[in-house]
Amino acid sequence: MQARNLIRDMLTVVRNNEVVEASNKAAMQEADKREKEAKKAVVFSKAAAHEKVIATSFKCMQDIEDGILQTEDSLSKLTHERYRGFAYLQVCERRLELREKRPPAETFQDALTLALTSEKQTLEAARKELLELEEQGKKIVTELRDKRKFLSEDTGIRRLQMMEDLKTLSPQVALPPVKANSSPKNGKAEPKEEKKEEKAEAEKTEKPEEPAEAPEAERPVTAPSHVMTPEEQKKAEQASKELIADTLKLLEKTSCHRNKSLETVFKVKQDTSRANHRSEDCLSRRTAELAEMKKQLEKHALDVEAAILRAERSLERTERRLDVKDNKKVEKFKQDTAMLENLRGIRDRLGEDIRNKFAALEIDNMCRRVTAAKAAETKMKQSLNRTNSAPTLKKSSTNEAGAGQAAEGFGDKPPEINVADANNGTSTAAKSSPGSSKSLKAGAAAGLQ
Image (cartoon, rainbow, N blue to C red):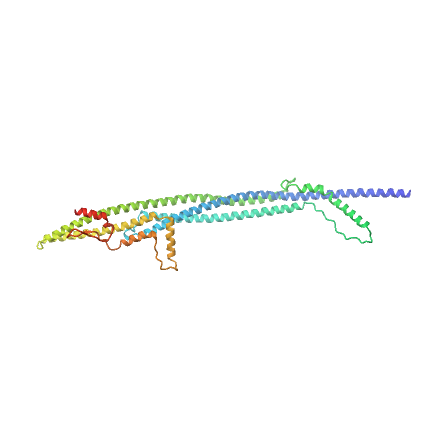
């Protein structure tokens, strides 16, 4: 009887202990679950805030990429237009340099000189403006790339932070401590009991956590089942607003530079083309005028030459028949001789003028044949000629050969125009000059006949 009573009491105590232990275990599991849910809510709240900033940063990076492409395209257009203007500038400078070699009588300021000077000023001003815009564009591209780099680094840091936060939600299973082997005195019963206790503890720790945590850890970060706290939402919105504001300022600056670049390129292209067309038109008209003047002067030279020949023959006949005692005839003969000398002086002046017009025409024709490649080649040769390594190198150029020969051919001495010998009517050949061409010879012979 006493044994049964003790057994009943013992079993009642054991059941009561088990009930208390089970209730305590459920409470602990519930508290652990609530703690995990709170931790999960904090992690997902941070992830949502990061996602919002990342989305804004990604949009800003796309806009920045478009801005970089547009600015680089603007820089390409500016560079091409600057190269085009530089080619025009080389031609203009070469033409001015060639026209400085004109004879002194032709070095007045004509319409062509004014047009070339105006074109040079226009090209230099346009080149300076294009260089300034290129510098601004390069700075803008650098700022855009720095901004994109900052956004990319910030996005990477935020994603790493999100991964670190998510790792804290994964189940952490504690490994059982390693125990030393029991001594042979304890026998085989103790290791078996230890193994049973370890299995029981492992089951207690694993069973309540596996079903609750496995599906939750696999949930996507972008779809949290909670709402952000007002503070986190405010911070995310503030960060997004700052990023948007900075990016919009930079993009607005990029857009302004783009519009200004396109307008400048269009304006510079029009101005340079207009100035170049004006110079070409003036050069064409100038060469036509010089050719016409030269033609008229040669015609006058023919008339003067024919008049001189006839006058010389007439005065020679008059001189043979002249009575030295007749003062009136002697005086008239002297006046006629002085008039003939004046006519010869006019012939010399006409020859000089023809030479000057011919030299100016040759130089202007050389100006019409100048190209950017020829101008650059001449400039390079001149720079090489000025080096210290070859100070005695001759400064010669194929483009300057014609003008140099023309200038040397028209020296200070007046040309000897063909004159007929008074005694036998034959002509003596003189130095070649513009006034002693075959046409002039034919005209003089026709005048004599």
